[in-house]
Length: 84
Image (cartoon, rainbow, N blue to C red; front, top):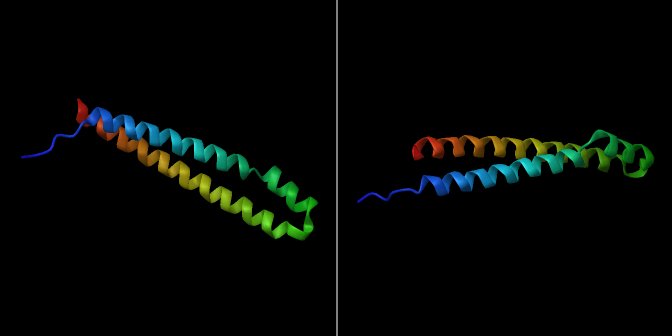
């Protein structure tokens, strides 16, 4: 007895996760803007190293979110292919 998957529901689920990944990438990318953190590093020399680290961490998070969104996009397409 095999369980049937509801591919339409799965596709919808992956679509939502894809959108969340895209939103996370945009938010982290906006935080990582070199103008903002670079400006903070110049105007606050006492904490310049911290600002550079925050910029690099935000860049890494943005990249990870973009990768997650791409993964979910492929999963959504796979579910759509199985649905038809």
